[in-house]
Amino acid sequence: MHRRLFPRAVALLALVATVATVGASGATAESPTPATTRLRATIDAILADNRLTGAQTSVVVVDTSTGETLYDRNGDRRLIPASNTKLLTSTAALGLLGSGHHFSTDVQATGARRAGLLSGSLYLRGGGDPTMLAADYDALAARVAAAGVRVVTGNLVADDTRYDRTRLGPDWTWDDEPYYYAAQVSALTVAPDTDYDAGTVIVHAAPADRAGARPVVTTTPPTSYVRIDNRAETVSEGETSISIEREHGGNTVVVTGRIVVGDEPASDWVTVWEPTGLAAEIFRAALYRHGVRVLGRTVLGEPTPETAHPVARHDSMSLGELMTPFLKLSNNGHAEVLTKEIGRVLSGTGTWSAGLTAISEYVADTGMDTGTLRQRDGSGLSRRNLVPAAEFVDLLAAVRTQPWFAAWYAALPIAGQPERFVGGTLRSRMAGTPAAGNVHAKTGSLTGVSGLSGYVTSADGHLLAFSILLNNYLTASVKALEDQIAVTLAGHREDAASTAWIARPEVPQAPRTPEGVECSWVKPITC
Image (tube, rainbow, N blue to C red; front, side):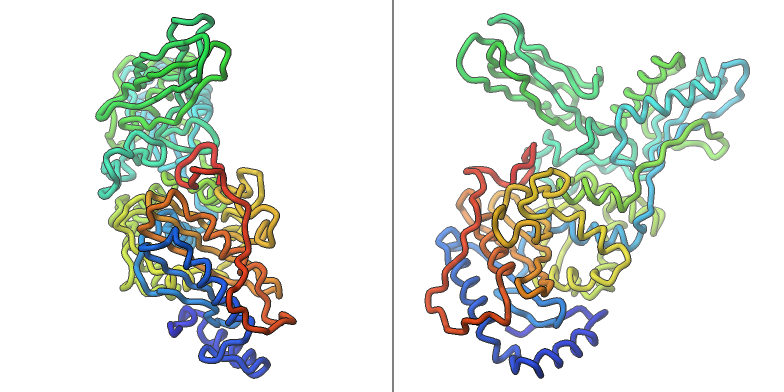
């Protein structure tokens, strides 16, 4: 089990601590302590589960206080990390943009203003804010009205030019396109609620008051940008089964199925085609409500002239605050916006290519060997992302020295904590075990791909960094195996009283996640 024990940035500190530990215990990487030997045997037994027969595994555990590798199974093997990719994106964003970074959305005007008449156009300029709500656009419209503007003779121009017009990741699968986790990326967008899934609307289908009638279909936010094709039926009995799907290439949403009289509405998040247009439509409607009439048309994608003058502005929450919904809920859209924002701020180009180049340079500086990995997007939705578990552990160990680490660590999902914005994607996992309230880690899931990478404090108070990557399994879920490893690590202690070799180690059992439920892209998040 030989590998680079620690990132370059803290290698000397780790070396000193390791020497001290060896002097005290007599253990080395070649002659592990009995407790470490038992730990390795237990994890080996977990990974021998027949659910992983024929699968690929990469698992590494490091004691961050000493730099000692406690476990390494195929640590240098490149596997698909799914949303564990967000560890790279989030740390690079904090390191390069700063935790105080904000996104600004502003309204500017061209032409002369006189007695409430603007003889020119109104520009709504997007700054990439993925947390803009309809209420925020309403507040901007109110400020425009408060500034004395009543009539705009020109157009409403939606300026999304801070980023390029490539809306979808190059490797994303076509059949994911209607779903909220694969929303189109724009510098000017709107989210339906405080999960901040920008570029989506929530479609609700409520039963009519009598059988045979069409359900009542509405959207959040209310908008005419999406056209509803309602083919569903209200029935008097049976089970409710409603499907809500957006057709490719446009904003027609087809609602099919049956809903029983008296049942709760069925709801689903649906992406929109061209989110800039949705933001512009929401803002134009808000202007109308506040008594501002735009006589011209809505124009998408034109830059704001340098001669324009400011009228109103909205600033987002700080990047440090954004980390909570981003990481707790594994928000793909946030990851992609941050990738393009990094590119825009560092190189002047808001593209995936520019952002990924900067992320690669940043994580290389922390000690990751970027020659061993490939990152193709910010979120992990691409199946061409490849990262070894050992490199994740190097990153996790290195960033502990950063000034933003405490807030970032708190923003990671926490095992067994039921509040959505505390436990996040781990809120129903490992409850009632030593890992509950202890494991802070990023989950990841695609079909046949699962990952869990983060931190756990062992029973003797050591902060362990770990990465578990599992690929190419055929069973529905392997989350229980990840949980067993995490619970094992939470219970590990080098000063354990018993040192006898356990030929068949007892594997701790974590509470089971509900059958058929994966952490990937499920609303509300249940695991």
